[in-house]
Length: 395
Image (cartoon, rainbow, N blue to C red; front, top):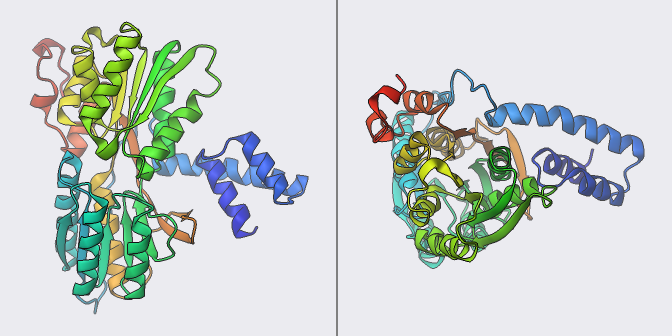
């Protein structure tokens, strides 16, 4: 199987192309009927493995939602100097990413210097250029704009500094050495599937994040892929990318649709819980959970909404695992070897790059206790605030 055939198979497994598009492209590549059948068989087997790897929960959650990622330091390893550029501190999760990454770096005996770009691609460019001048062993970055960051990755590679693309994958640069991310297409698809199960009829709204990120693009792609085939019962009345993930822009989008359709919305699919909370504002608390609202990152306030029944679910990515995978990769690269972890490859338009897909799963009322106990991401008291004591589960 050639690399192009392998890429096509991976896209089919991950849901980035449907069966019809897969067959059309396979035929265009000149594959025989038997070769296509072989690819389909391989994809089916790998797809089951991929689903297990990504840990997308069904009715029965696993005993451990987020297994601990083991860090490995070899005898004779040097202390690696790492530079890490975060996109901002505005979103809750980036504070946790920084905390988890710092802890992993300390465990490996390395050092790290942090900057954050305040969601400004130009500011990030300046920060990365400054990092390159300082000559760290490795640069880890969350690209504010996955295409604009290509130049930065290429510059780092020219300076012989490995680049780790974190949470989002930099496109169109062979300078990217390794990446770590969730499967955002799968997350979007699963979110929409849960919405369709609960609200199979009515008007749907998609509140997407910044179009400059693959997170926003791919989650949205996953939503739309799942909604296809349901046009007889579901109407997508709005899909909008909101610059800088600004909750105010998401709220304005949702408010416009709420007004236009006289409150008759069935589901709001949110790229993250900044928009989920904005939806609750528009819906005046969404009493009774009339509108299905699903998001990501399990903001404490939205975890409370899930417990109260006004929110439906929020996807959580193993952020500690993501940070530990990245810290291990930086340690390995700084010591001149391939990263320990790599369970996937991604063609970013310039090269086929190895990286790690991190487990993600939907947090619902049903598994909230398990989530609290195993992650510590939110607290019991905050999550069940407003829930009568007699109706609170014993976690």
